[in-house]
Image (cartoon, rainbow, N blue to C red; front, side, top):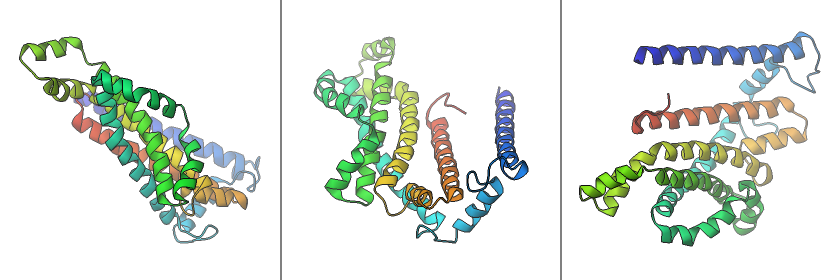
Amino acid sequence: MQKKQKIRLDRYLFISVLSVCVGIFIWWLVTDGLGIFRSNVLPSPIKVFKTFLRKWVETKPDGATLFQHVFASLQVALGGYLIGAAIGIPLGIFMAWNDKIDMFVRPVFDLVRTIPGVAWTSVMVTLVGIGYMSKALVIFIAAMVAMVINSYSGIKQTKTVHLWVGQTFGASNWDLLTKVAIPSALPMIFTGLDVALGSAWTTLVAAELLASTKGLGFMIQQARGIFRLDIVIVGMVVIAITGAILSSILRFFQRKFVKGGRM
């Protein structure tokens, strides 16, 4: 079984690397190769790669190196994300487990969840100003919504027969929650963490476009204003790679804590 999984994983990695290489080749072909697009319209992958290397040590044109932008974005994204997890997961669990909490919280939550996270940016900037806190609060709201929904769904999907068995053996309400419902809901909870991670990362970039002095979104916005599309694409690539790394870390913990977790 493990050998089949390893072969499947190796095949997936090979196909993934091949598809990326094909995409980069087509990109090179329509720019430097055939000259279909001029460099000021679509920079070639070679130019973007050179810009990527230079941006690690150069602060022009936005006043910070690529590392400083990535670090600033990660600080805000992970801060808001972790607070969202600390509040969103327990809230979703207790809403699903206790009807009174559900009735009290749901009306407000149903209103908040329909509002896009980035829509809160102007409100937070007005309340706390441009800085770490405003963006972290925006990300907190965006991440919390996904975590509440998935945690709630996970608890609600607990099989009734498992609860009956626990009650038969004299388990208390707390034991049923912590030893039956939450363990069975872990796959959904981790799915919520994964979805929330994507929401946090994309919301951060959108928030940085409007209210920031440093970060990947700010870097993209500044480069767009002076038509430096090579820096814009560098920012997009770094966002994609960073998001993929964070998702891989989350899947690693999922495999450790969830029986039958994804590969």
